[in-house]
Image (cartoon, rainbow, N blue to C red):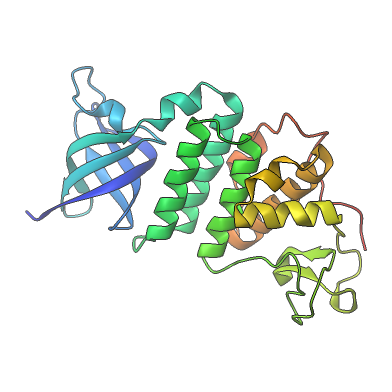
Length: 253
Protein backbone atom coordinates (compact mmCIF):
# COMPACT_ATOMS: atom_id res chain seq x y z
CA UNK A 1 0.00 0.00 0.00
CA UNK A 2 1.19 3.60 -0.61
CA UNK A 3 2.96 5.27 2.29
CA UNK A 4 3.71 8.86 3.14
CA UNK A 5 5.71 10.78 5.72
CA UNK A 6 4.92 14.09 7.31
CA UNK A 7 5.31 16.28 10.39
CA UNK A 8 2.18 16.47 12.53
CA UNK A 9 0.89 17.80 15.83
CA UNK A 10 -1.44 15.48 17.73
CA UNK A 11 -4.87 17.02 18.37
CA UNK A 12 -6.73 14.19 20.10
CA UNK A 13 -6.83 10.43 20.53
CA UNK A 14 -9.56 7.80 21.00
CA UNK A 15 -9.30 4.24 22.23
CA UNK A 16 -9.81 1.53 19.64
CA UNK A 17 -10.16 -2.04 20.76
CA UNK A 18 -7.96 -3.26 23.60
CA UNK A 19 -4.58 -1.90 22.55
CA UNK A 20 -4.97 0.57 19.68
CA UNK A 21 -5.79 4.26 19.37
CA UNK A 22 -7.23 6.48 16.69
CA UNK A 23 -4.99 9.56 16.50
CA UNK A 24 -6.22 12.81 14.95
CA UNK A 25 -3.34 15.00 13.79
CA UNK A 26 -2.85 18.29 11.96
CA UNK A 27 0.00 17.74 9.54
CA UNK A 28 2.30 20.06 7.68
CA UNK A 29 1.50 18.82 4.16
CA UNK A 30 -1.46 16.41 4.31
CA UNK A 31 -4.03 18.41 6.26
CA UNK A 32 -5.88 16.72 9.08
CA UNK A 33 -5.10 13.03 9.40
CA UNK A 34 -7.00 10.34 11.29
CA UNK A 35 -4.88 7.24 11.65
CA UNK A 36 -4.68 4.10 13.76
CA UNK A 37 -1.70 3.62 16.05
CA UNK A 38 -1.63 -0.12 16.66
CA UNK A 39 -0.56 -1.43 20.05
CA UNK A 40 0.22 2.00 21.53
CA UNK A 41 -1.68 1.26 24.74
CA UNK A 42 0.58 -1.64 25.55
CA UNK A 43 3.43 -0.90 27.93
CA UNK A 44 5.92 -2.25 25.39
CA UNK A 45 4.83 0.19 22.68
CA UNK A 46 7.76 1.97 21.05
CA UNK A 47 5.96 5.19 20.15
CA UNK A 48 2.86 5.52 22.34
CA UNK A 49 4.20 8.51 24.30
CA UNK A 50 5.08 10.28 21.04
CA UNK A 51 1.44 10.29 19.96
CA UNK A 52 -0.17 12.10 22.86
CA UNK A 53 -2.07 15.40 22.42
CA UNK A 54 0.16 18.48 21.98
CA UNK A 55 3.11 16.37 20.83
CA UNK A 56 4.77 17.11 17.48
CA UNK A 57 6.10 14.11 15.60
CA UNK A 58 7.55 12.95 12.31
CA UNK A 59 5.14 10.18 11.33
CA UNK A 60 5.14 7.60 8.58
CA UNK A 61 1.76 6.18 7.59
CA UNK A 62 0.35 3.92 4.98
CA UNK A 63 -2.98 4.57 3.39
CA UNK A 64 -5.81 2.37 4.64
CA UNK A 65 -9.38 1.89 3.42
CA UNK A 66 -11.04 4.19 5.94
CA UNK A 67 -8.23 5.10 8.34
CA UNK A 68 -4.52 5.33 7.68
CA UNK A 69 -2.09 3.27 9.76
CA UNK A 70 0.84 4.82 11.63
CA UNK A 71 3.99 2.79 11.02
CA UNK A 72 6.59 5.01 12.68
CA UNK A 73 6.66 8.10 14.88
CA UNK A 74 9.69 10.13 15.91
CA UNK A 75 9.37 13.00 18.36
CA UNK A 76 10.06 16.51 17.05
CA UNK A 77 8.65 18.51 19.93
CA UNK A 78 7.74 17.05 23.31
CA UNK A 79 5.68 20.04 24.38
CA UNK A 80 2.95 18.12 26.16
CA UNK A 81 4.96 17.30 29.29
CA UNK A 82 6.20 20.87 29.81
CA UNK A 83 2.75 22.32 29.19
CA UNK A 84 0.98 19.85 31.48
CA UNK A 85 3.18 20.96 34.41
CA UNK A 86 1.40 24.34 34.47
CA UNK A 87 -2.40 24.48 34.70
CA UNK A 88 -2.73 27.86 32.96
CA UNK A 89 -0.57 26.66 30.07
CA UNK A 90 -2.40 23.35 29.85
CA UNK A 91 -5.86 24.91 29.69
CA UNK A 92 -4.70 27.45 27.09
CA UNK A 93 -3.15 24.67 25.00
CA UNK A 94 -6.33 22.60 25.24
CA UNK A 95 -8.33 25.52 23.82
CA UNK A 96 -5.81 25.90 20.99
CA UNK A 97 -5.97 22.21 20.13
CA UNK A 98 -9.76 22.26 20.12
CA UNK A 99 -9.78 25.35 17.87
CA UNK A 100 -7.33 23.79 15.42
CA UNK A 101 -9.48 20.66 15.26
CA UNK A 102 -12.62 22.70 14.50
CA UNK A 103 -11.11 25.21 12.10
CA UNK A 104 -9.13 22.86 9.83
CA UNK A 105 -10.24 20.13 7.46
CA UNK A 106 -8.66 17.34 5.45
CA UNK A 107 -7.05 19.87 3.10
CA UNK A 108 -5.40 21.53 6.06
CA UNK A 109 -3.26 24.65 5.99
CA UNK A 110 0.48 25.01 6.35
CA UNK A 111 -0.07 28.37 8.07
CA UNK A 112 -2.45 26.82 10.61
CA UNK A 113 0.04 24.04 11.31
CA UNK A 114 2.96 26.43 11.81
CA UNK A 115 0.86 28.75 13.97
CA UNK A 116 -0.25 25.93 16.27
CA UNK A 117 3.23 24.45 16.64
CA UNK A 118 4.67 27.89 17.35
CA UNK A 119 2.02 28.62 19.98
CA UNK A 120 2.58 25.27 21.73
CA UNK A 121 6.34 25.85 21.69
CA UNK A 122 5.83 29.30 23.21
CA UNK A 123 3.66 27.86 25.99
CA UNK A 124 6.19 25.13 26.74
CA UNK A 125 8.99 27.72 26.99
CA UNK A 126 6.86 30.10 29.14
CA UNK A 127 7.63 32.96 26.75
CA UNK A 128 4.44 34.91 27.52
CA UNK A 129 1.46 34.67 29.82
CA UNK A 130 -0.66 31.71 28.66
CA UNK A 131 -3.81 33.83 28.40
CA UNK A 132 -2.09 36.29 26.05
CA UNK A 133 -0.64 33.46 23.98
CA UNK A 134 -4.08 31.88 23.64
CA UNK A 135 -5.82 35.11 22.63
CA UNK A 136 -3.10 35.86 20.08
CA UNK A 137 -3.39 32.34 18.67
CA UNK A 138 -7.18 32.56 18.34
CA UNK A 139 -7.06 35.91 16.54
CA UNK A 140 -4.36 34.75 14.12
CA UNK A 141 -5.99 31.39 13.48
CA UNK A 142 -9.30 33.06 12.63
CA UNK A 143 -7.48 35.54 10.38
CA UNK A 144 -5.80 32.70 8.45
CA UNK A 145 -9.22 31.09 8.04
CA UNK A 146 -10.53 34.28 6.42
CA UNK A 147 -12.15 35.96 9.42
CA UNK A 148 -9.63 38.66 10.24
CA UNK A 149 -11.25 41.12 12.68
CA UNK A 150 -10.96 44.87 12.36
CA UNK A 151 -9.91 46.72 15.50
CA UNK A 152 -9.49 50.20 14.01
CA UNK A 153 -11.36 50.96 10.76
CA UNK A 154 -15.09 50.29 10.54
CA UNK A 155 -15.71 46.68 9.53
CA UNK A 156 -18.90 47.70 7.68
CA UNK A 157 -18.17 51.01 5.95
CA UNK A 158 -14.37 51.07 6.05
CA UNK A 159 -14.45 54.50 7.68
CA UNK A 160 -11.07 55.25 9.30
CA UNK A 161 -10.89 54.66 13.04
CA UNK A 162 -10.41 54.39 15.81
CA UNK A 163 -13.92 53.12 16.49
CA UNK A 164 -14.85 51.61 19.82
CA UNK A 165 -18.12 49.73 19.26
CA UNK A 166 -17.44 46.02 18.80
CA UNK A 167 -19.84 43.66 17.00
CA UNK A 168 -18.58 40.12 16.41
CA UNK A 169 -21.29 39.43 13.81
CA UNK A 170 -20.13 42.40 11.70
CA UNK A 171 -16.42 41.58 11.80
CA UNK A 172 -15.01 43.84 14.49
CA UNK A 173 -15.34 47.49 15.45
CA UNK A 174 -17.92 49.61 13.64
CA UNK A 175 -18.72 53.31 13.34
CA UNK A 176 -21.36 54.69 15.67
CA UNK A 177 -23.81 55.36 12.82
CA UNK A 178 -23.98 51.66 11.87
CA UNK A 179 -23.67 50.21 15.37
CA UNK A 180 -26.65 48.14 16.58
CA UNK A 181 -28.31 49.48 19.74
CA UNK A 182 -26.67 48.17 22.90
CA UNK A 183 -23.52 46.93 21.17
CA UNK A 184 -20.47 46.72 23.49
CA UNK A 185 -18.03 49.60 23.50
CA UNK A 186 -14.34 48.92 24.12
CA UNK A 187 -11.73 51.00 25.91
CA UNK A 188 -8.89 52.31 23.76
CA UNK A 189 -6.43 50.36 25.90
CA UNK A 190 -8.29 47.17 25.03
CA UNK A 191 -8.23 48.00 21.32
CA UNK A 192 -4.49 48.63 21.53
CA UNK A 193 -4.02 45.25 23.22
CA UNK A 194 -6.12 43.43 20.61
CA UNK A 195 -4.08 45.02 17.84
CA UNK A 196 -0.85 44.03 19.56
CA UNK A 197 -2.03 40.42 19.97
CA UNK A 198 -2.98 39.96 16.34
CA UNK A 199 0.24 41.62 15.14
CA UNK A 200 2.56 39.86 17.60
CA UNK A 201 3.74 43.02 19.35
CA UNK A 202 4.48 41.23 22.60
CA UNK A 203 6.12 44.08 24.49
CA UNK A 204 2.96 46.16 24.07
CA UNK A 205 0.71 43.19 24.89
CA UNK A 206 2.52 42.38 28.12
CA UNK A 207 2.37 46.02 29.20
CA UNK A 208 -1.46 45.95 29.20
CA UNK A 209 -3.18 46.08 32.57
CA UNK A 210 -5.53 43.45 33.96
CA UNK A 211 -8.68 45.34 32.94
CA UNK A 212 -7.62 45.54 29.29
CA UNK A 213 -6.58 41.86 29.29
CA UNK A 214 -9.87 40.82 30.83
CA UNK A 215 -11.91 42.81 28.35
CA UNK A 216 -9.81 41.63 25.38
CA UNK A 217 -10.24 37.98 26.38
CA UNK A 218 -14.00 38.43 26.36
CA UNK A 219 -13.85 39.97 22.89
CA UNK A 220 -11.66 37.18 21.51
CA UNK A 221 -13.85 34.44 23.00
CA UNK A 222 -17.03 36.00 21.58
CA UNK A 223 -15.47 36.48 18.15
CA UNK A 224 -14.04 32.95 17.99
CA UNK A 225 -17.21 31.21 19.07
CA UNK A 226 -19.36 33.23 16.65
CA UNK A 227 -17.25 32.33 13.63
CA UNK A 228 -16.73 28.70 14.62
CA UNK A 229 -20.53 28.47 15.00
CA UNK A 230 -20.16 26.31 18.07
CA UNK A 231 -18.86 26.72 21.60
CA UNK A 232 -15.29 25.96 22.54
CA UNK A 233 -15.71 23.77 25.59
CA UNK A 234 -12.08 24.23 26.63
CA UNK A 235 -12.46 28.01 26.99
CA UNK A 236 -14.54 27.70 30.16
CA UNK A 237 -11.61 25.97 31.88
CA UNK A 238 -8.89 28.43 30.83
CA UNK A 239 -7.03 29.85 33.81
CA UNK A 240 -6.80 33.63 33.48
CA UNK A 241 -5.39 34.09 36.96
CA UNK A 242 -3.96 37.57 36.39
CA UNK A 243 -7.36 38.94 35.36
CA UNK A 244 -9.37 41.05 37.75
CA UNK A 245 -12.52 38.96 37.30
CA UNK A 246 -14.69 37.10 34.79
CA UNK A 247 -14.16 38.14 31.17
CA UNK A 248 -16.48 40.96 30.16
CA UNK A 249 -16.56 42.81 26.85
CA UNK A 250 -17.37 46.20 28.37
CA UNK A 251 -19.98 48.89 28.69
CA UNK A 252 -22.58 49.33 25.97
CA UNK A 253 -22.73 52.04 23.34
